[in-house]
Image (cartoon, rainbow over all chains, first blue to last red; front, top):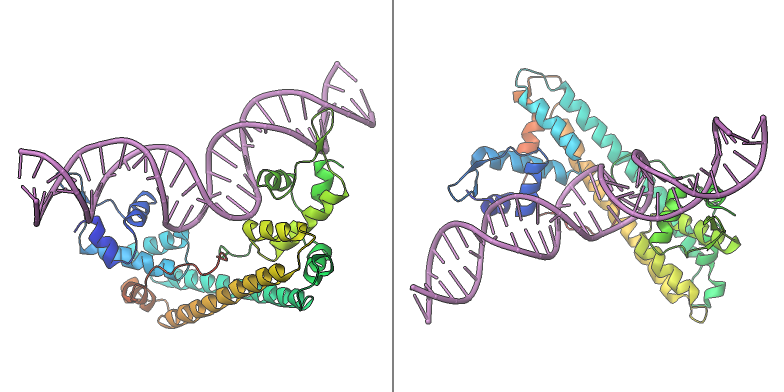
Length: 143
Length: 143
DNA sequence: CTTGACCCTATAGTAGCTTCAGGGTGTGAA
DNA sequence: TTCACACCCTGAAGCTACTATAGGGTCAAG
């Protein structure tokens, strides 16, 4: 199958498929005489797997690690469990961060209920007077 | 004051200050004879404001809009309220997305409780067989 | 007169793509 | 046959919000 068809069954764009190949997540397929990429079922499975991992917000590094662990047919899946546990922990942390953020934003929003003059707007005053925090170091790759 | 001092009071790096200038968030300051940037109190206020907005995960576009609305001293603050409401909505949406994600990940994690052979690992089977979803269009800039 | 802390510009790198420029290929219709 | 049009190719640039690096200039103290 050609790249357009593969992209369609995996619900992504052609550019994304080519990008995954360059990024080393998808192995380079055979080529036709016209230099078109030619994929088989194994590629479909692999790409679906990658897209599912991405739908779960895993990074390429995580996916790469997972694919590596998969391909060691000899091993056990302890590493896989650990990787997933760590990823769940990332998601948890990001949810906690965003919840705190929402709290701050809601408080700020309370500072101005009506359309008043800009000079008197409590939101702007709040934004101007907040204690500037330390740059918060990222705990996760989730934005 | 020189750039290092400004960066210190605003809790960010010198590079970030220069970056904000290039990005059009911070106006170019006067220069000394030695071509050093020379900042005053207005710059301190502005940079603190920007850093506070960033601490609340606003994008540069949002901050830029906010600064524009502020500088129209004549206007009322309806636009400011609206901008903040929209930003809060972004955060809400992202929290909802991540919660759903966590649910999916937890279910997946349930599929494998022990160290077993990779071939039998329920997590990998889950990742392989998930219904690939539509590329989810970003509802927010929050990752 | 040298050391070290600070400043300058310009460029490249990060993640995970998307978009664009500038081509080649293959098929159906006029 | 020739045209249009959909698809394919490569390589490079763009996106966000910075961070890092190279290669230099400035200034005060010892």
